[in-house]
Amino acid sequence: MPNETKSMWLPDAGTTDGYVECGVCGATANATLGEHGPTSFANAMGGHKRHYDKYECPLHDELWHMQAQKLRQEKAQTASARISEILEEEIQQILTTRTPTKEI
Image 1: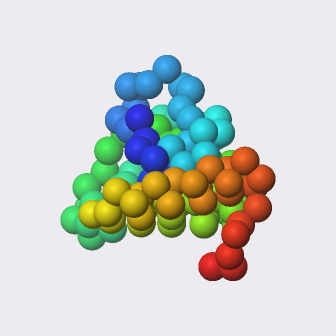
Image 2: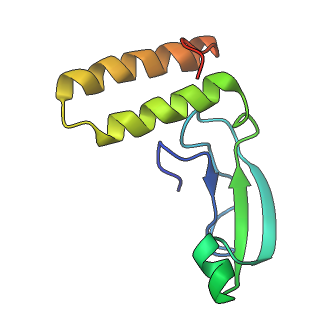
């Protein structure tokens, strides 16, 4: 399953039941099943291909979603419990209102 900092997930083909929630906002991800090709820059440069399913949040291009994702990434990186709590409060505000709190 995607972690809370990701809005896209590329598991091996057929390894999920076809239902995945966005790790950032919890929306049901759009599924493209049975893809075949590289899944990273390194794979593409090395000519490596694999069978995979692609799950992507339909809201990932929304400004509020991008901000929530960046804040979740900051939260994952901070060593401070207090800053983590502050970030989580702002993330919840953004997810509840679906409105960014700052232009990014």
